[in-house]
Amino acid sequence: MPVVNLRSDTQTRPTEAMRRAMAAAEVGDEQAFLDPTVAALCERVADLLGQEAAVFLPSGTMCNHIGLRLHVRPGGDEVILHRSAHPIMAEAGSPAALTGAMVYPLDSDDGTFTADQVRGALRQVGNRYQPVSRLVHVEQTTNLTGGRVWPLERLDAVLDAAAEAGLRSHLDGARLLNAVVASGVPAATRWTTTSTGWPTTMRGRRCSPTGSPSCRASRSTRSWWTPTSWCSASTTRPRSPTPCARTTSGSARWTTPRCAR
Image (cartoon, rainbow, N blue to C red; front, side, top):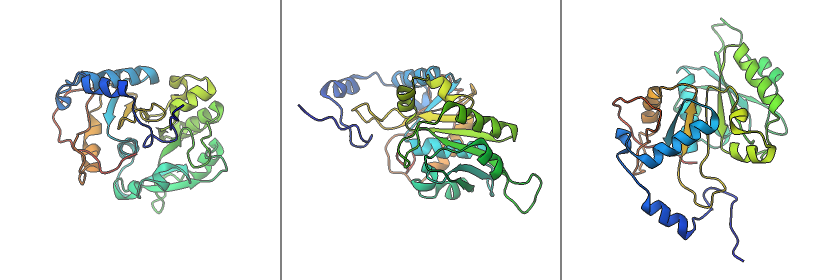
């Protein structure tokens, strides 16, 4: 019996039927919002997560970067996240290099953290010598600490603490759908009230398509395009980020990122 490797999105391989489906897929001008296959994917993901809009991007790392860039102002705003989170461990310093963000790492054995830890990390409001606490970043499931699913009560408490302090929140959903299967809790509930986030479309599918749809609780996705271009200045990838269903039209210069996940 052949072994199917599902350990990593970069190690899985498509079946012949999947290859035929990809070759026969209906395509269109993605920059004119006319690619029906990608539009259908984004429509489905937005519905799955209970969000207003989704945009397909070439990598999960790019989803994280744009999520941070949408919320963090250049010049030292601070992101609160676990010390083992992907932006710290596996994105080549992009929070600093591409967003100008400070990071405030939190510690625990399982990759999650508590509402009290968030409150303890908050900077003093109005103190001109300190960075401004701006964003809480959550990784679902945790990666380097064993793929732990966030307990729903803990996740809700963390997001509530962020909202009470006036902070925004971003969900790295690289394994969000794994958490849904493991816990039986629907994706829209797991998403809860984060400002932005994304689920992967790559892991465990045996077909490893590139990219992930990034979502937000807003019908307009226009604000995605400027940080998309910033992220992608030095790429050699052939395709551009794809506008999807439920987006607003408008011209912008779009390129593709050097980062991949």
